[in-house]
Length: 369
Image 1 (tube, one colour):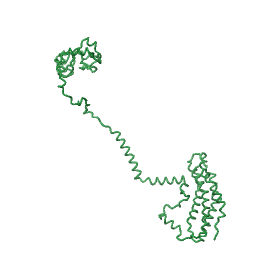
Image 2 (cartoon, one colour):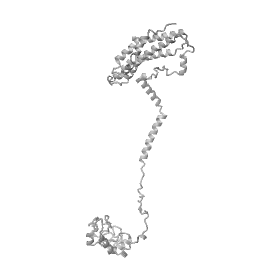
Image 3 (cartoon, helix red, strand yellow):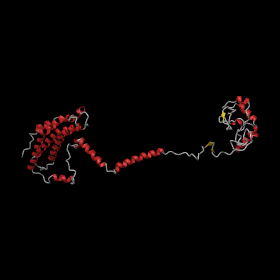
Image 4 (spheres, one colour):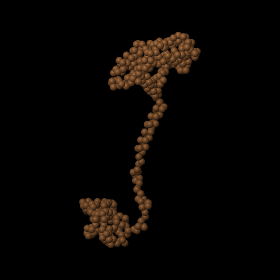
């Protein structure tokens, strides 16, 4: 017959293979095998108990142990007697059992090699067993975290390069749109801190600003007669600003529509206030640009007319600031809750500019010297 374990030819009816010492009897396939030491259930192919390490039943004998140990296949244990099996525990051998085993085994019949003759294993260094490396399933190193960091850095660098280099040339248009939106939402905020408005310059003008200023200003000082004519023109313009058609319309439009729910209606009603303020600022700029002689007789008149124009500006500018707040309220939102905030610039301005203007306007009319 053929041993099913080592595939070698053996005699028929043999219970154990003489080559591999595996059990090949009739009960090899239909009976269970239990460890005689701890009682654990064993496979028919097990030569030792996987739980306590004892040899499987049927292979324990002094005669076979010698050949087994010589072949390095199993440890040498005598067959356990009934008395020894009753005194053994699954985890610990009593001292009496250990002594009985030592007395029952003749070391000369086991052919056990001495410890000094056993060559140290190649994978033992300093008493520590190094883990074996599986050549067929090598451990792979994970680079997932490094890849994620590189992708994030690439995205950040690409975004910064796109904004800096602007390959599609979209940033100038964005900046221009932002400035236009700011001017539409807060027109009065374009005024400088000193209360003056920069003169508008045509966008298609190719002449430098310094050249335009030189054209507006005469190269020689004006005569006193020319100074008087310019002052009277400015004085009459300031008086026209104080009329019902000018500041009266601005005040009426503000009182009627600054709380309107329609944003378009508020924008149309605020146009007169912004236009009047720009006109007053133009008069102030003209007075400041007068090239009067150093010893002109109208020096005091220049100061008076300039002050009248400033008071008129201080009357209109708070209305424009109120319009700024009103126009900042989006379409569809209620303006009632913001009424106190809208009227705040008027409360802070007070009525001193109006009182001073009414008091000195006629008294400061320029007289020809």
